[in-house]
Image 1 (tube, protein in one colour):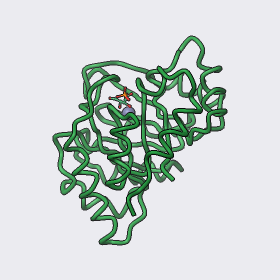
Image 2 (cartoon, rainbow, N blue to C red; image 1 turned 45 degrees about the vertical axis):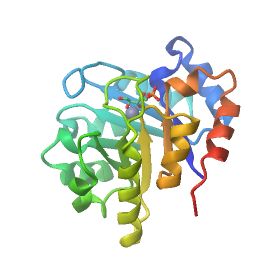
Image 3 (spheres, rainbow, N blue to C red; image 1 turned 60 degrees about the vertical axis):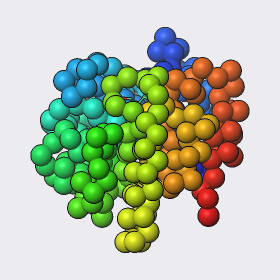
Length: 220
Ligand code: DX5
Ligand code: ZN
């Protein structure tokens, strides 16, 4: 069954402790934590002190999505402050293999992320080494944007590679995910849905988790 990771970017930051309790009660699989530096993406979000607080406030796995330049310089600190999973953008470093190794060295699961303008073929050499691949389904930097529809083909291409080489990395999608776009992605092979603005505007978190998990079933 697909895993649901709400993006804390759309949570109520004044009531984060309660939000985390509500997410746990709703049955989410983890939380997605978006780090933006105003350089790699044109926005600034949350960082190490908030990660530390979130880690103290929940046992849910924390998936840290680094939208920053020079990500290698910060991996150790994000791992030590509670990141269970860390993903780095292929576009943010000339040394993606080293960055993935570094994440593993610090005991976290390692993911590679690609922007909408980057092809799946570009990351093929690293796919045997990652625990997950994040396919951006919007341009990174902001919540609330519209899903880019040809992302579904990229998920399918990644799934085909995964089957061909009998690999078991997760396929995560992030940006504009709702019940409709989530279903399309899962049918193409996605195993993790990140959802921000759609998720947090729902009256019942539990209902939306159930809806995402039940409407989004793999096609086979
Ligand atoms: C965008 C972030 C996303 C964002 C998703 O740069 O990586 O995780 O929070 O938000 P929605 O679901 O609103 O597109
Ligand atoms: Zn994200």
